[in-house]
Amino acid sequence: MRELSLHILDIAQNSIESGARNIEILIDEDESSDVLTIVIADDGKGIPPEILKSITDPFVTTRKTRRVGLGIPLFQEAARMAGGDLEVRSTVGEGTEVIAEFKLSSIDRAPLGDMAETMALLMVLNPDVNFRYEHTRGYAKFVCSTDALVEMLGDTPIWSPSAVPVIRSIIREGLRNVQAS
Amino acid sequence: MKTVDDLERIRKQAKAMTRLRESAETTKIVVAMGTCGIAAGARETLSAIMDELARRNLQDVIVTQTGCIGLCEQEPIIAVMIPGREKVSYGRVSPEKARQIVASHVVNGQVVGEWVIPTG
Image (cartoon, rainbow over all chains, first blue to last red; front, side, top):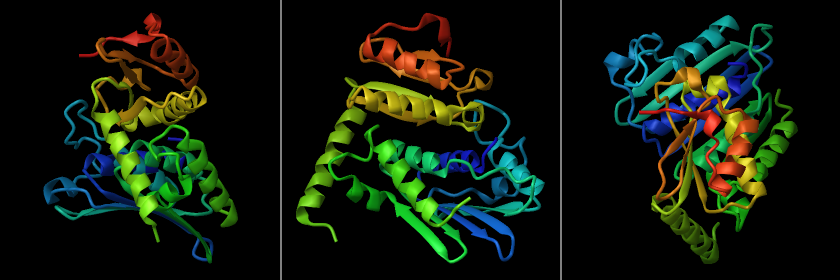
């Protein structure tokens, strides 16, 4: 995938399918340590230990439609290409956390891409899930959540197609303010 | 802090949404958003659909997502479900094709035959 924001969209789909009510997406661009950290955390049903230990193996999947599970291995490959790695922590009944680290300045690091689009579509298509997105760069931080956006949208329901451009522009402006890459 | 009016508004929205989502009378567009779909451009296809629905003010069309349906080579895949009619799946749906499918199939009821794919 060309953009890390597409990997994030993909991993968040796993969280949605796991029945999560709350999904948190954290991005931290730390120039002092030259590390980009991406965390996707959910309170879904969790992954049993026997599947978790081979989660980064593309030939392991619980899906029946295709025998290869590519989401996590592809994201891990993107992290490793850029001098980082990926880890999945999960507890059955509590939730799952996917943590990916990249060397921020690596020329092999895929661009973050359009996070505003990824978040706007996730929030509008999944109005029953409370999303929280936090983007930190140095001392600057932008936070938005489904709850806060429902209020900002006023009479426009969050599940309405016309909510997409509003949310997209709120997030774009927020990311500009923290000078996100 | 939310006021009582805010809560009432949110409650009404949620009720209206539940009614639409659960109703067999509502036209639905389903976008496959598995890894294969996203890698093939499903996000851009989905954005185009949402934009077209907003532009045409089609408030009663519900867009939902599904995972991989086992036809990865045909991604991005979308399905249009109009009440009382058979579900129609389309393959290799670019943003431009998606806009045409909304205009032709969703709005005017005309299936775009050349892009239809057989699904089980």
